[in-house]
Image (cartoon, rainbow, N blue to C red; front, side, top):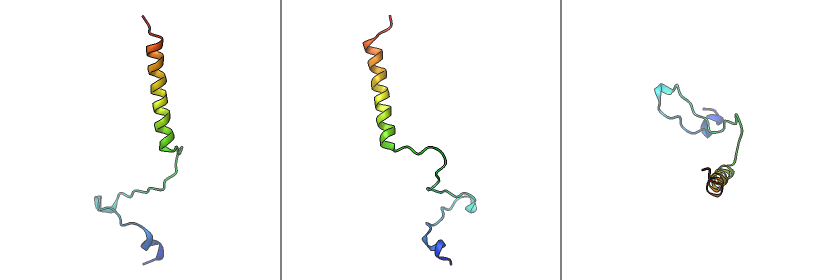
Length: 57
């Protein structure tokens, strides 16, 4: 058994080993979850402020 094989986590038992999941995929934009949650809260707060401060008839 190679050195690389010993460091890997065991494979999940699914469909006779046809599926493989990797946690280190880096395709696309990487955003810190804290910034994502904070920006969502700010967006909701601004939306509510606009709705209640400037009501439409």
